[in-house]
Amino acid sequence: MLRSGLTAVACVDEAGRGALCGPVSVGVVVVRADTKPAPLGVRDSKLLSAEQRLDLLPKIMRWAVHAVGMASADEIDRLGIVPAMRLAGHRALAALPLVPDQVLLDGSHDYLSEPAQTSIFGADAEGYAIPAVVTKVKADLHCAGVAAASILAKTARDALMIEWSADYPEYGWAGNKGYGAPDHLEALTRLGPTRHHRVSWSLPGPA
Image (tube, rainbow, N blue to C red; front, side, top):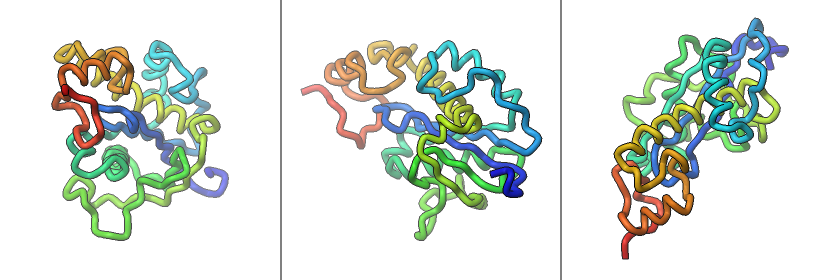
């Protein structure tokens, strides 16, 4: 992309789309023509251990301009998961100190560009024009910038789930990070949802 004359490409990936609770998180890493090679070991966050991701995190933050945006469980319930991902992505892009020429988005679906209808987000997203978006399936496997964005999104979200786990230890969030692991499902069946759960989803609960 940079060879085609672009000066800054925002590489974007998300974490938490399929979780039962907690926010959806979108990471952005900006790659420019003068950006040095990515830190050794950067690859798709799903292929790394938690320890490896945490080791890479400060290296990524020093390597490139970056940001993370989130949309809460309440926003997911009110807007739906795809609009909430868009909101999180807009927040991340708006937090950058520069406006990229183009966005490279992992996957096949452009969830960042505004639909034709009026924005449903209100003030959080107003005033920010999303650059042209290019989607690429498995971009996190082929582009170091997208892989780095996936690590940013994952570590930021994991940190929140670990923090909240102290108040809700029965749900096992420190380990399962809010996904549908057996210990999480068992706690939901026994105790019901917390304020961090996506209650619009089909969650198990007490009989």
